[in-house]
Structure formats: C-alpha cells, structure tokens
Amino acid sequence: MSIFVLNPKHQHLKQHAMPVEKAVPQAKPLHAVTKKAQERRRFFSQKEWIILGSSFLFFILALMLLISMKASLAQEEYDMRQIEQQTLEVKSDKTHAEQEINELSNYDRVMKIAEENGLTMNEDNIRNVKK
Image (cartoon, rainbow, N blue to C red):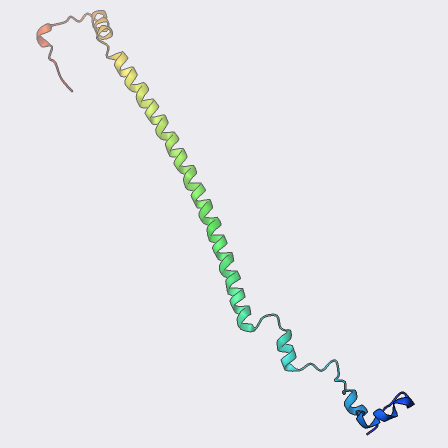
C-alpha cells in the first residue's frame, strides 16, 4: 500500500490520506460490455418490435383497403352517371316518339290521307274509345 502526497508542507495530512489503490479505481476494459448494458442499449425489446411491426403492417393494409374502396366508389359513381345519361337519352327519345305519334295521328292529317286514297267517312262506324 502506498500513500501519495504531492507537497511536503502537507505532511500532516498523511494520516488522512487514502491509499492509491483506493483513490484510483481499476479501469475496466472498454470492449467488455455487460449483458445488462447491452439490454439497456437496445432501442426496443423483442415484444415491442413485434407489436410495432404488426401495427405497421395493419396500418399499411388498412391504407390499401381504403385506397381500394375509394377507387371502387369512384368507379361505381362513374357507372351511375353513365346509366343516368342513358336514362335521359331514352326519355328524350320517348318524348320525341310521343310527339311524332301525336303529329301523325292528327285528325286533319288522317282525313287528308283518307281522301287522297278515295276513302269516305261513314259516321255510323265511328265509336268513341276512352283510354
């Protein structure tokens, strides 16, 4: 055991001096890391990594499902607009056909065609039909 005193004036402190072995702790090698220190150094535990990975996977799947549903909804809206357009065209054609029927079945027109073909009107054969 050795005692280390720097200044001769401070010889009276010798009795309170600490041995050098206790004053300077033994240095541990830098490359030897304990298991506890390794566990502290890990960012996440294995269980946390599993939870994080499955949460990330769930988020990605939910995002893909959302995008798929949005695309499907957009396609259905497009199809619905196409059907509405076809319906409007059919209604327009129906209106034109009804107008043409009314024009062709006009009494004056029918009488004119009948006279051109030599037909006469017999009042006894006329009956009123209600729709």
